[in-house]
Image (cartoon, rainbow, N blue to C red; front, top):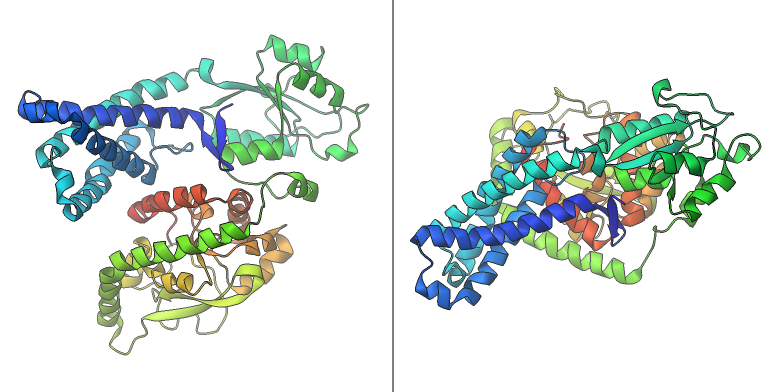
Length: 475
């Protein structure tokens, strides 16, 4: 398998392996930097390798987390090696450098044996080692020999959607050996990929080294085995050691979302996840309060500057913060707070309007604080009041919710958890400004609700740094 599940969240095995090797290289970079800094390992360091070792581990940890925050290990990375290298440089010399500088300022004794000269050399050496490793790593995984070979049973709408997901999200991990159509389906996939299996399904799979069969048949309940659904043959393949996966499970695993249009309620009922735990609620609340206090401690200067900037642009009497009705946990309405980024009369007629790209209602200061996500900071107080969590689906306005519930299946299920300042959908999908966008984001929200855990919350928080720095998904 290309993924393993850690605390219910799917993690790419290749990226775990890459991160582990890079971590070891970064530890080695500290020792190599020490050697080059003094042209010889100083006697004091030789005698105190035990003191240098935890510092090397901490350096490697900070740089690895910084790379995670900048999206270096994303499965859906499409910027090539140059883009990945640029992100890594930012990780090392901006995020990592700031964290290490703050830490050394708080605990000066930790800087012993890891001074500025060694730190700079270690960073440069680490960057070179990591870049060389990645060149070899991504060249190797691009080889078809390392890709998982799959056969898709079905060639209709579901199969076409599956092909699109593989092309967009997992092309580097899979080779499609073909689509085996059902006799009751209208073919929607590329005819060049359709295979007519005249032998048994197992024989075909063995001949083509198929490792996994994905069942993506439209309206399977209407197709019995006499009309083309090979239930007994699939069982034969499974008992012969070939993985058989239902299409919704495959999409959840590989794309990090739950496809809703063709989803049966029985899948939601019988699949794992969607668990509720009182202890988890207490842990989440403790986490929210702690994270809010830390963020408030570091962000208050930016909040003060934002207040001054809004006043300078719009006048001393201009409102700074605005409250807007949103739908929260269990469908209860609450008022979410933000720094005002639009003109005062942005919705003077009282009708809710989706924010658009390059929206003319956004002020100059508003444009900046939106890109930097500073406008969201007052929601810290929503979190402290218990109306929101740090991580969760973004709350929508009541007018939009009523409209979307009528057109999008399972839309109301996103209110089973508290809304969040940031969320899985915000990382995986750009800003939503239409019903179609809302449906796409719902698929990621359902994945989060189904698989939520403290680990997934931490992953989302760390990767939100990337959203803030590059302004991904901002309008």
